[in-house]
Image: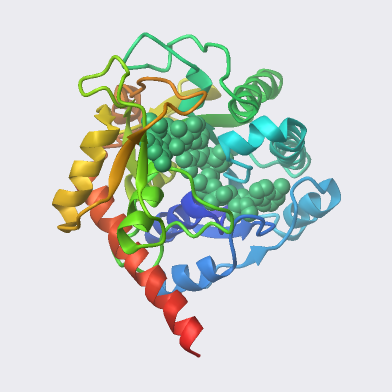
Length: 347
Ligand code: NAD
Ligand code: WQD
């Protein structure tokens, strides 16, 4: 009775979470339409854990196909819903695609949970629900400002949908996990971020520059009101983030939740500037990084970082890895990825 349906299980956070779930005695199965991933992730999970995880290559916007998965697996006790489109920039150009994918998939999942009597849901939310908050660090009580993008709005709306769903269904429990800036890779060097779309987040851009895939890192502005003028973010190691999902499941299964829809911030709780992140990369890896200061990126906020006390107190979550470990693990993974690509090119 430990079967968990992981949506978006072949993606970056989903695949790392599957490893943590297996190591903690859960039986994950995955559903991922492979829009931004491949089933190679499941081979990597197998190489690390010895367990082969089945992936349903299904689009969760297809209600019938989604229901079929629940029908075939009547022993699912909980769902971790990672599946979503996540590019902030793309969402500005294709807002309807983002609303359709991120909201329809969520609606189909909660419908199926109702029909097949699955009680526990963990939802991938985001620090972007806070918008541009001047009240730092943000706690779960910090009011949500206007969303900065359609993507962020899908997360605000997803949270609202789940609050109303839980209000109506007392027997259902949801946890809204608000991730800050997930980064880094598993310590084995076997698995890491492997999107099919072009990466634009800072840490992938840094490692891709250091390995020579990009010419330089452009620091988006050094004239913000921060300690060195570059933007401040809260980078959280992917394996610390993954473990929060396992802890959240334990919390729900043990019935320790205080209400049936609770939110938790998941960040390290420390603000790091872009220039500090670059220095941390150079220190952790001994690599020189070619960067220059550029224009501000439209839509960026100057600073955001978390207070994660609630997750520590209630979930027993204690993130332990800092920015240098993030950079080191991302770099090890980038080197492995590059070797894989060059060996494919040779054969
Ligand atoms: P990802 O793109 O690596 O993984 C998401 C997976 O969902 C992909 O493998 C994709 O193919 C799949 N997917 C998307 N739409 C689907 C659909 N309709 N049906 C089936 N599968 C579908 O992204 P990630 O970084 O692992 O993010 C996971 C979740 O965490 C997302 O909800 C994202 O919005 C959220 N999040 C991510 C970050 C981040 O910086 N990575 C930060 C905050 C929140
Ligand atoms: C980090 C910092 C950039 C690239 C996004 C989403 C957020 C959440 C996490 C999903 C910023 C700077 C970046 C580069 C740079 N995702 N930067 N040069 O924008 O904080 O957050 O991912 O929910 O919702 O908005 O992440 O990694 O893009 O940027 O200077 O080439 O690095 O300006 O300050 P961001 P990011």
